[in-house]
Length: 363
Ligand SMILES: NC(=O)c1ccc[n+]([C@@H]2O[C@H](COP(=O)([O-])OP(=O)(O)OC[C@H]3O[C@@H](n4cnc5c(N)ncnc54)[C@H](O)[C@@H]3O)[C@@H](O)[C@H]2O)c1
Ligand SMILES: O=P(O)(O)OC[C@H](O)CO
Image (cartoon, rainbow, N blue to C red; front, side, top):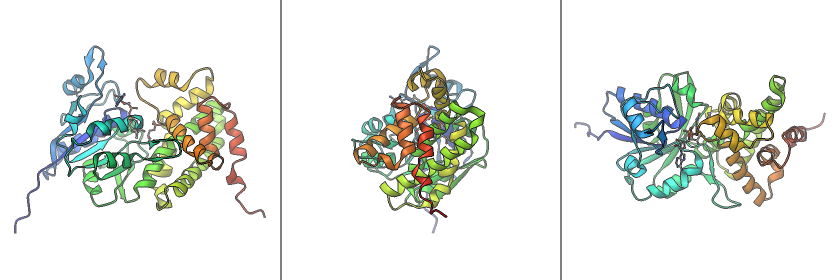
């Protein structure tokens, strides 16, 4: 019997910032090269419309094939079509890749609710958490799943967008609860962007979200100590990973500790703590205590948005409400420093007195 012909899968990318554009470059290139007929040859990308040099950003992308604001200097394949209306961008898609800053996810999902294909699935590339009310904390993939009534996996990894877009070798992690993840791997993997497929969605996503707090802490050390701070920064990274694991195991039980050994775990903490935007702005914040993070973000990132301070605040709200702040001194200190409630140097006190140093048996 002849095998059943299935229609090519349509892909939509919901977001077009630095990472959204880098991933569009990869996915657009893969569908252009696909000779199996698995994927439709057009990838629709939702662009939050704005004027750049007197022109609409969608028009620039569709004419010049470059997102000149968020990924300048990198061409996008002609398979990628910018669409200013999110409902229009998503309506026919079988595979939806969400890649917007986490603060916009709820309202975007509300707009999309009831408008997408019921058989569609989603992949969240969003690094952040959902904080619906004080005392509650949840996964962005669950927000998408519940708002749209579809399955949602995650892609998290050591993936600084500019390096990925430049084609430098890296790894990433896709976590999906069922085999649907393999279609996403086929759409995303290239010889220099290697995908590992796992099924631990919660811990993969928590890694991606919480590492932004740790990377911000690492940047504070850079700003305070500069080149003398290598060992101190390593301590922030190690203690930060311990808090990430502790947070995941206490509040999202059921995941696997080894997920933190995937690209989404330790590797992402490392690359973000050396080459990420959270690190960069945190270093400037520590060196310029008169400025606010919002000022520095605007001055240094040209419209790109930090996820670390917001995630630190959401996590802190949850920990405070549940009276667990003291169990996460690094997360708590980063939040208090962002809010200017304590000086940057107080981070060092938290490291000195951290419970991980008391946990060892005395000899
Ligand atoms: N940039 C990276 O290196 C990188 C890598 C991996 C994961 N991520 C994650 O991907 C997600 C998206 O980050 P990014 O780097 O693509 O974005 P970005 O910070 O580069 O850009 C900000 C984006 O937000 C859009 N925007 C502004 N106001 C908006 C609104 N009201 N509604 C919807 N969109 C609005 C802008 O148009 C722009 O596309 C984040 O969770 C981030 O942590 C980023
Ligand atoms: O630039 P950051 O700090 O938002 O981090 C970027 C990516 O998450 C790195 O994997």
